[in-house]
Length: 336
Image 1 (cartoon, rainbow, N blue to C red):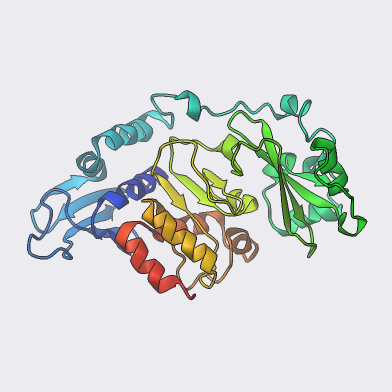
Image 2: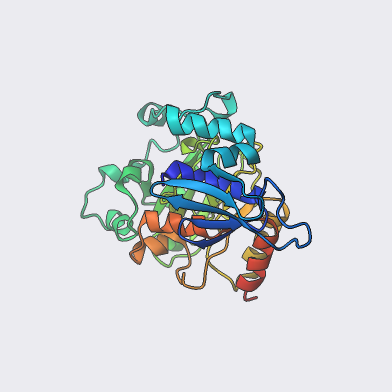
């Protein structure tokens, strides 16, 4: 089964009642053709299963039988058109809306007049430098080193790009920091986040250069035509396909879409996070609820502990819920 098939199964999942995974490549739900049992709202006798490399649908109530493409067509004809286009004609959407346009990767040209011009990207720092070793220890993919920067004197730097931010410089808190730039969809820097390398407090300091923009990290590299994942931390977003980070804030997406999966940190005892998860479910979005066998706090920690990107993405897919099933699982998950 291809990644495209998995992606579109996850897209129709919220529209199939009582949808649940029985085991790998076997899913159960109420039949969208006959509506399943008229007497019991809990009976689900339709199945999606794999034969060799393809997925098929079968209802044991009405006898309906289709391949995955026709099931998608029954559930959502518009989604079916997208699936066929992506499956057989490549991965480009038929219509390119201006608000969705992907930026041209012209970072060097942008940096000439950007607030990053006084900083050194990690791609140009010696491999033996402690700061670069920090990124390696956290297993940050080297493809992102050119968009992460080292700042030796954070307060001085911030006052240079945004004068008056720190009225009085405090040398006691003047530590080197990892600079994580926030780009908008046009690849312009609108905020920077300074992350401590050690136990210095505060751990994160985010400086907005344009107050009218939300603190959303990763806008310049995602495709809003595809399923969008939203995590909390910018570094976590580097390990998940088509992912942005909310940087700890409640965000309003720049597009109208419900094909979004929120992936919160694995903190069942954190009341603030749990409350936000309930809010996301109430707003009709999908959400990941980590199973008990996941002990790590966040995605970067999972990577550090040895899990692969593919394993994490499969775990996300297997534990994505919406609606009543999300509420039920969240009630079981929370510890606060």
